[in-house]
Length: 136
Image 1 (spheres, rainbow, N blue to C red):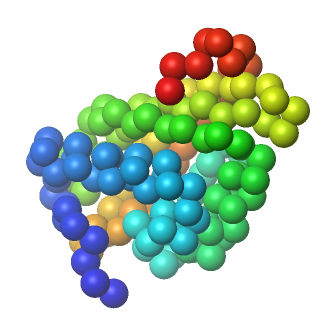
Image 2 (image 1 turned 90 degrees about the vertical axis):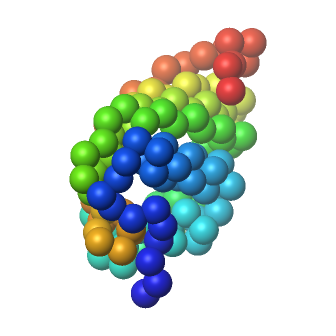
């Protein structure tokens, strides 16, 4: 596999760049594109789900964006050290019934030496909102 720049160890500049790249990819809502940032054996905890490997990531994201319509995400660097990055995020979506939600959360990322995310641990809370309360 080729390298996925920027590579660890991260500086503030390269950590911010990695976070922005992740935000842009997730906002594409393209499971294949998003999955290419993760190692082949990536391990995730997402809420109450445990996801292993790129194929499971692709399946998870495909299902996610079938349910979370008009999805829009914003990520912010929280902390970084060597090959790890912590991120604060929020995103908004609506369900098939038109109910809007804002999800808040934190992610802890760990990267391999080639710049692929090998671990992703996400804690997420959803809040029902009115469409008029949307920020993103």
